Image (cartoon, rainbow, N blue to C red; front, side, top):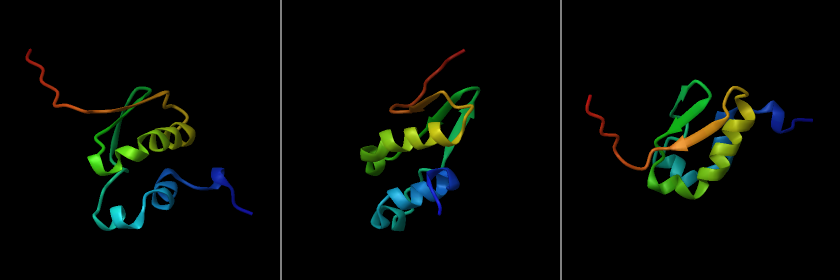
Length: 78
């Protein structure tokens, strides 16, 4: 019998994100990890799923303690 722990992040995202969004190639697998922070650039179409996406990532990657989504451009002048 398979349970939640038997599936990877990508498998769970395919099960959660509706087929019509997947057909549009909306990618929720693209994230960066810096230390204990995971950084997403989620598209508007999947923002309704942002909390579950973040929670699944926290569950599946033990080093992650914080999940963030960039909402604006980052402008940094040295």
